[in-house]
Image (cartoon, rainbow, N blue to C red):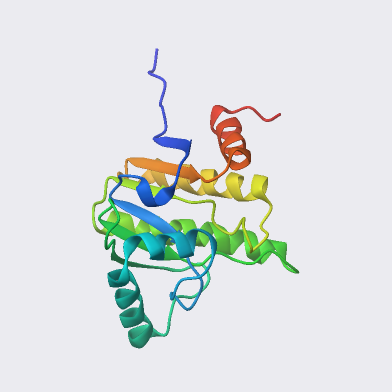
Length: 180
């Protein structure tokens, strides 16, 4: 009998700025200069060093495009790095939005793997003011990370950090394989 493969995907309800992992992901905007929601919370908790690094990236490449990611140090956060990614706004073209959200997750995983990071924590990208449907966003996040892990050795610990109970319930249901 073959052993049951347990995927290293977990969901928890927490403040992502307090999670101890190699890298946390920031659901950033294209300017990288902070904003509201998780972006504002990460910038506030990290302190001015994070903003300074984001300004340097802007000066070098003009920000971060939707679906792409950049990495900085973590300032005052307990993680080593912050990976900033820009998710899509849900709107007129659902197909493109789905592709861009998956690309945002892959871009973060590529950066983490390039540094041999073992652990990464994702917020619920695009589900706040960008209005991406929460169930669909979770489905894309889980599928993208599962596909990644099927062919790559790292990161070995992927966490979906939910700020609220609603998102946590969605992730727990999908990770358990319950389609209800």
